Length: 161
Image 1: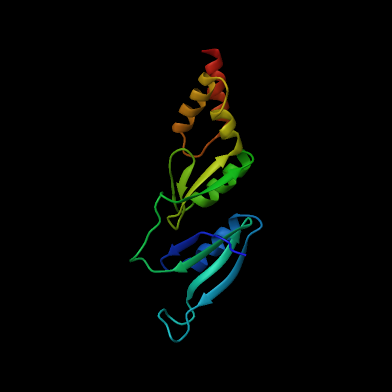
Image 2: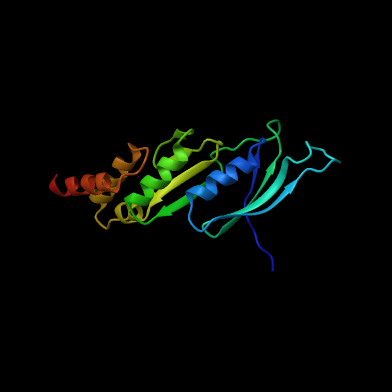
């Protein structure tokens, strides 16, 4: 059966990245790890490529070196969170050593872009009342980590305006 999974290019820290990601997400595991042998081209014993699973989604990665490729925001991983506690958990874990961005986006310590998205965001932005939806959107545009209570507060303030 054919399957499709993202393949990520790391400089030389794939094994470290896999250990980090599988510690952050539940139902995650490290799969097959291929190491360079004496024939090269990398240093014998160093990780060449590996497979891992994050909360049921399969990934593949290679240690390709720093010269050829780096991560950009053109590709990001989106994490749907059931509540603010999940948003806080994933945001705090993934942004450590990385950098926050706007509207729930961040770059982790490896330069990979993530979107940490509470399920309630869609409800707020899709509110049938255009004034409430617009107020929630404007609130989100001013956030880094998305805080649902602040979205709802902005929407509720639109009712009073």
